[in-house]
Length: 283
Length: 306
Image 1 (cartoon, each protein chain N blue to C red):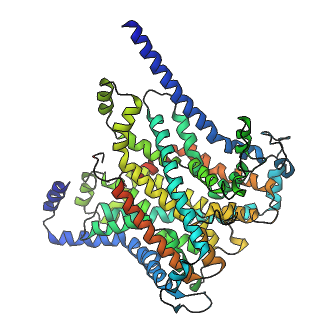
Image 2 (cartoon, rainbow over the protein chains, first blue to last red):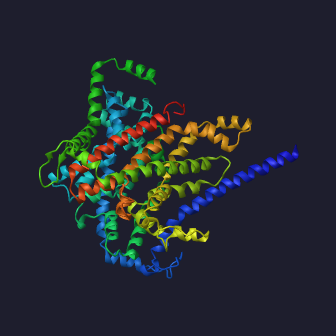
Image 3 (cartoon, chains in turn blue, red):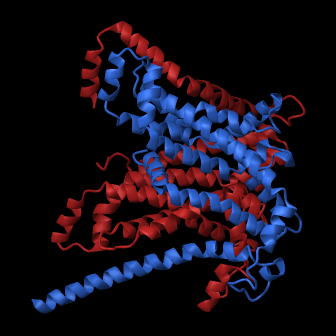
């Protein structure tokens, strides 16, 4: 009996060890591209192309980074990106909170049927609307401005509506009842009662909208047109498509583009995870 | 659920109040209604119309019937793009799903401690801007100086040319797809949290192994989550654009010419807007059909997880 118990315990330990080993192996594998990105950003172009491959650069100096700031209009691209990001986040917060409120806490005929349409637009590939939107925005003389990327953000997004509606459905009815009796109108209740308690869900939406706008590539590629308006992502892809791309500038640019997102993640991790699980679960 | 709605309704017998509420409700969702009409419904319908037209932007669209659709099915590049996309769906999506589920199940195992940082590790690739991920993977996949082949070299395997090879370019993209499956892992982990602990306790008393528990309890109850993630992946594969556009431009020998890349080229390189719209509509119909098949296949709603 005792011997059996010991064997069993050894088995449990062994199984745990194997599972842990598998995870550790993949986790390290997952980090290697990041390690390469950071190390590569310090390498010169000739070092990058050197055979055999070396993990570490010869020198750790910031020449590549300084060159990047001097040789490409980094600050202009950053400014462009931030303008789009800012309006995307503001637009997403204002429109989706209003819309989700209308879909969750107010009753009107046909509401749930209309909400099914909202959900259906989630599976609509962007490619279907992209061409007519391009033609429409061309006629409106919006192509070559930030407007095609910013304005639609003020009219709601199915994912964010869904996420906020999930949250608002969970808020008990009693919370708004007293202000209703006090004679507050619907907009006041929305603004003064519902918005303050929705902060965690709004934070998730803000972060998702930020990441989406910061990382977007197809939108800027189709709508921006001139070099003057390029975002960081678009500028990086254009630099890469040169006949002889300056890899010693591109990899530092990559590091600088990843860094803010990672910092944001480590500070606000909770809201990231919450946003993804709330939009994913029972979708 | 229905019962509470009914009792709430009885509180609002006053029809004037109900009408006021309905008016407010529609006011609140008005931005969505305007956006839906202007930025979704109108584009969908005009896309359908353009798909039956010859439209090169400079001239007004000319109605040509089903010509675009007929031409598409004789277009070798289009057929190649469909095959490549099907390859990603039939191999890439299942492989990625398998990996994400396996990692999530192990991460969720109660007996393992200190897995918090690993969750972070699997998640952070999804935060990397697509363009940066592409620049990075061009280097990771380099035949001579790339990380992947260097690692393979350590165990004595001579790695292929990856993005430069017609055979290995698509597997290279699948590797990249697996690397960025962190969102799915987070959703799986949330789904796993919902599975009642008591089921596992009962199984353990019966002497079920970890493997057995996974097959008999975890996977059946995780079905809705798997379905959701697979639908997301399938739509993602159809929309797979930035990666081939930046990394390979569809080469070598059209081996990475994917559906959306060819659509983009037709629309914005050759300005064949009607032709590209026909492609977009085929995509919409096929994506919808695949989602329906997935729903049927995984028999959504049969398990009682939600």
